[in-house]
Image 1: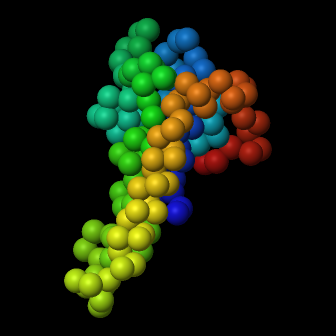
Image 2: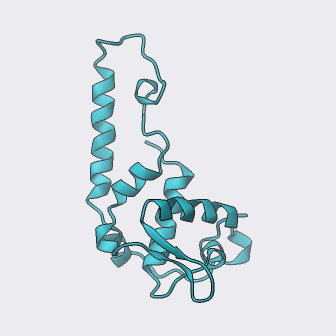
Image 3: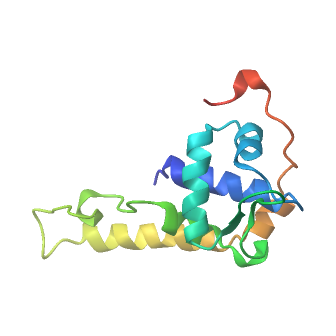
Length: 145
């Protein structure tokens, strides 16, 4: 199963926010992760709608985790960020299958997809943070634009 950039970037943003005691700005997150500001803004907006981050404008504002890191499950983040978790066409929204209604592939793939997400749900953001190095600045030559 391949995850979209949205899931990848979301998990990176959450890890970074989990490493910081203070609120971060979009600019600081973008710079430290080496991601384009526009990507960070979209990700933070969605994470905010999901209650995973808090955002406050103005002086003293910024972005921080919306709940304790031990209450954020990785699989739940992926489920919410992925537009389509269908690993085969018949599981995708609007997908079709010539073998339906009697196709054994569909339930097998659905079960595999669920097992993948459940495996991710065994990890909380706090558990990942305990094993992740503290992020410094990304050198300008390797930043994504």
